[in-house]
Image (cartoon, rainbow over all chains, first blue to last red; front, side, top):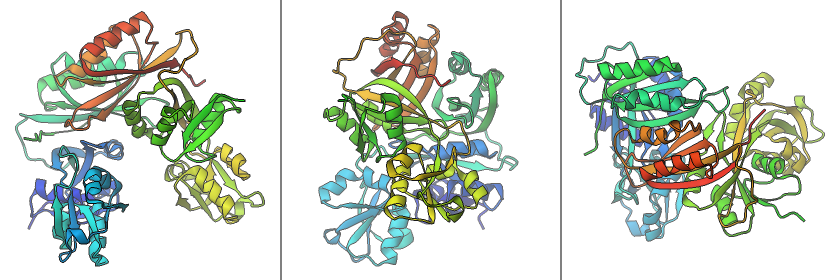
Length: 279
Length: 279
């Protein structure tokens, strides 16, 4: 029996569930959640061993809601995974492409397949999510429609793949983070080739962000991401989220962390985890 | 006759229209647009003299769509304006607060009034936008419902203000930017107390963002905002948007701009404009 219970946002067949199986293996048990908040709750309440949350898509940008939830909760980031988002055009098993009159999907998936839809002369109709549009096709036995969703959704709902790689731009990746309870016993790992995510708030003084970044620059620690979110209640002040290359236990990184936390009015390490590099 | 034709996103009564009248004066003529893209188009096609676009809310964060559109178009930012977002609970003229059974508004406005709605025991129902929910109330002569929208919407649709300042957090401001065609003759202004917005892409090398920020830090130029957006087609590379205090014609700022543009693979000044400081 598996001991991996993975909470994800969406319904069965979602890209997040595809990422869960690719990363945790096919013996993982997935738990669909209505909202990102519910994913965090499932892990907090020990109904799930891990949550898997998308934080950024290479075409659409950051998913800010999850940055806010990482701050509000006390879970630890233990892994990252880059999913190549391959949109598929799906139809009922007996349906041929030339019978399709319209295509259902999430507005973002429709936008990412805009040119291919245009070339086929097919209008897109917005649905709540990609997996849901695949499920609806099946439930309604809809012969004249197709859905844009994952290959995984085709398997879940017994649909036929009419077109694979239906997205206009192949540089379509979503970065996922796995989150776990802080007190969970983690396997001991070497600290080689790790990434660390931190969040901090700075005292409001000129040049302070530069000073914050200099903690890393002077130690030749490379930053892979910087993101800011408004600090609720303080006007035009921000929390900053930084990912840097290195492990929080590495003495060089630890010195940078200590220097930065000295000039911060809030500071937290969200986790150190192995880098997932795309070939 | 006014020569100020202001394109804004939304319908009459929207917060963007309220901001337009507050900033440009009551003799401005406002042009409602279905999308932010249409606002840019109205200015490009000279149907409007100005566009007024929200770029950030102090509680909800940045409106990234407008950062992308600033990049894609060649319009110039000529002003900024901070609107204090004061939500009002609106009803039909003859309706009292205790007759109201439900409240319509945009999900974000409902969320920002969550506690006050709870205290009154009123459920919120999501509508497409705030002004639209006020208009619907009027059009349907709905006696048992209220809408959350601007004071301006009450005037536009002849509604009664049941509660003013209905938002839970008074630190609710939206920052708007006015955009104009580049070739338009702008009034000559002193360069005192200005802000400048730039966008740039950096060569992908370690510490390059730190190097970019050092162009400003070494000259004691204060940054008021930094924002990143994914560079479409390049994986995990970003455009950076920076606002700094100072005018692009100021020699100190000009030197920083030149240094930064030397290490950028893309660089554009989006505009210098008078600072709007909140008292």
